Length: 282
Image 1 (cartoon, rainbow, N blue to C red):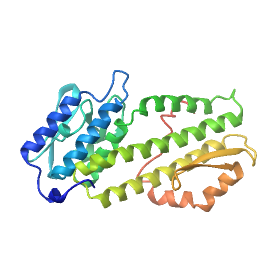
Image 2 (image 1 turned 135 degrees about the horizontal axis):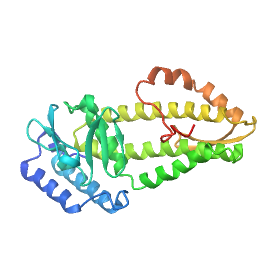
Image 3 (image 1 turned 90 degrees about the vertical axis):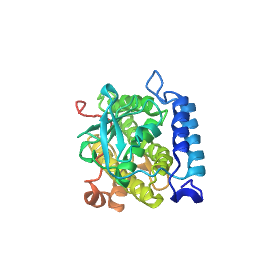
Image 4 (image 1 turned 60 degrees about the horizontal axis):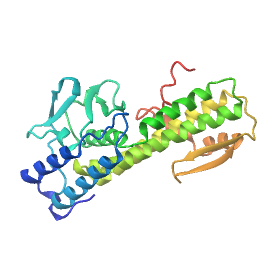
C-alpha cells in the first residue's frame, strides 16, 4: 500500500478538496467511443499515488446512503458526508441492480442492490474491481473482438480447428481482462483504505474461481466439437500467467490432474463464468 507514516490519521479537508479539484481538472475519462482515455487514467493514478504518499488513505465510515443523480446513477455518501464518487475519475457512473456487480461499458458500473446500505471491505474491493474494468482502455474493443470470436465458435461453416482456436481465444481474453481489472483496482482499493492482505485474498480467490469456471466452460465448448486426441489446444495458465500448448487429450487430463471440477464445486457460489453473453448463440 502506498502510504507514509500518516496513514493512520485522516487526510485534512484541504487535502481532500485539492484531490477532488485535481480529479475534476482531468476531465472525463471515458472518450466519445466509450473507451478509457489512457492519458487521463495514468494522470488519475499519479494523483492517487501522490495523495496516498502525502496523506494516507481515505477514512470512510462503513455506513452509507445513496443519493440519486437522475440519469447519472447514484452517489455513495458516507455518514460523515463524504461523496465516494468525488474520488473517482469523472465519467464513471454507479448504479445498483440485482444483476451486479458488473461493468456495462461507457463508464457504467453496476453494484449489487443487496449491498446498497454498507461500504465495508468487500464492497470497497468490489467497486475498485469494477472501476478497474472501466480503467482498461482495451476493454470495449477487446469485448467486441471477443464477441466475434465467440460467434466464430458457433459458426458450423468453419473447421473444428478454427472453432477451437476461437473459443480458446475467448477464454484467454476473459482471464486477461480480469487480471487487468484487478491490477487497476489495487490503487483504488488503497485509496479506499482497504487492508492490503484483504485485497490480495479477495483478488486471488476471485481469479482462481473465475479461472476454474472458465476451464469447465472451455471443456464443455470443446466437447461439442469433433476433436481428435492430438488436436492442438492453447490455454492461458493463471498460475504462470503464460499460454501453454497442449493437445486435446492433454487438456482433458489437465482438468483431471488439477481437480478442476471438485475445486470449482466448492467455490461456484462466488462467481460464474460467462463467455460474453453467449445466450442466444447456442
